[in-house]
Image 1 (cartoon, rainbow, N blue to C red):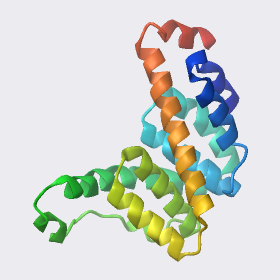
Image 2 (image 1 turned 120 degrees about the vertical axis):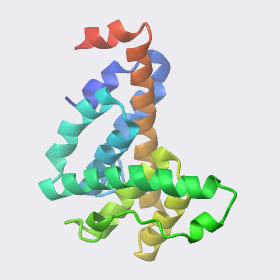
Image 3 (image 1 turned 180 degrees about the vertical axis):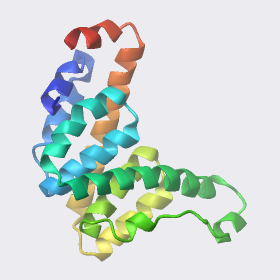
Image 4 (image 1 turned 30 degrees about the horizontal axis):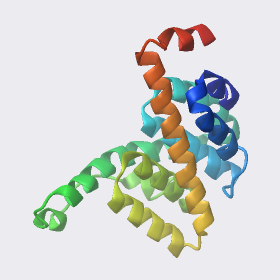
Length: 185
């Protein structure tokens, strides 16, 4: 189960995704831990079973147990936060933003890895989930910690490609292309 296997599953019309998946997982301003934590968190956030099955083992080859747990934690908590804060943003009544959220996020206080890494993973998941408020908050935190824009951009690039691959593979599995994906097994 690898990036290479997932690239093989992509149809010809998604050739750019095939190339981009290879590129974002091999050429990056991210450290190996940042890259593969981003891959794992984005794969979880993208909700594509096949993509997660294919990418998780390779990600785990590059991550410590603590980093893998932190990436999963970022994906889990951002799934909650992105819905909550995106909803506050979309509601016309600004009073909701003044109310206490009351949502626990204690795991982010001591994630077991560098906070920059967790912020990058949270940013990537927020990009997949389309939460502008969370994207802004994580980008601001990262920039405040001295992280270069190119590093932040790479995390977003990884998330966008992983998500696009998940959407494409899921469409294949759902449509008449199901046999093509199953046959590749």
